Length: 139
Image 1 (spheres, rainbow, N blue to C red):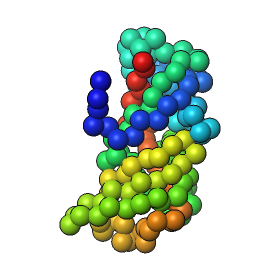
Image 2: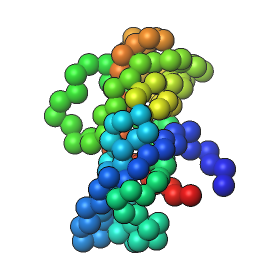
Image 3: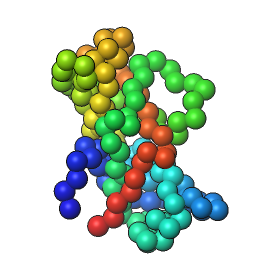
Image 4: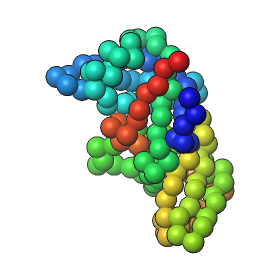
């Protein structure tokens, strides 16, 4: 199946913590860092997720935020440090490719955000992704 989701990072499930309707699933990405996904218990069952399951963490580029300084006081679980590899800008929006230990992430942000953050190739950033915005795929 082909998908338009730019960010597809391979990894292995290291933990599944069920709640009443939702579960948190921790995935160790191939490069080493962990990502947390908050998905339904039904999805955990349907995908057959358990420790050791091979998965891909899927994140739309519009759901990847970027920070240039220290990140404190946020509920966002996934914080992946990285370096900007390239920036493609249009009239209003920009596509920022960030190299992290877990793979390359694409972030779709406004051109104004790129300017305000002073982003350029080689800039250090932290990619921020809410756990509820991480989907998991198997197979």
